[in-house]
Length: 93
Image 1 (cartoon, rainbow, N blue to C red):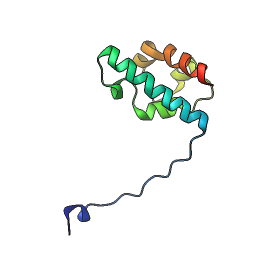
Image 2 (cartoon, one colour):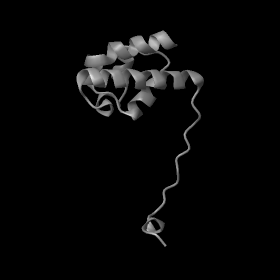
Image 3 (cartoon, rainbow, N blue to C red):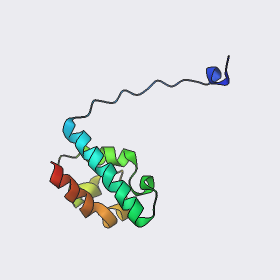
Image 4 (cartoon, helix red, strand yellow):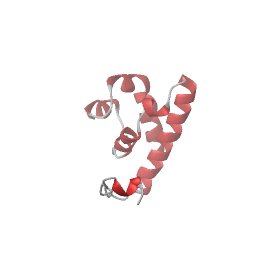
């Protein structure tokens, strides 16, 4: 009997399967985030956490106005790289 046996278990959330288009966007955003983080000397998860990448990748069309309507993204993120993100996603979809 290990200590791990005594820990509570939580049911895994079943996420809906992502479309090929959404996966392409997620991968492109993660690659962009890595490059931006290296250039800025910041941890990529501070720049754009995975939850935000997921939310952005589900948008039909990326615009600054639509980013502002999202609850997940902060104003400083939109100001710093909103144009970069929308430009990147526009080249994918």
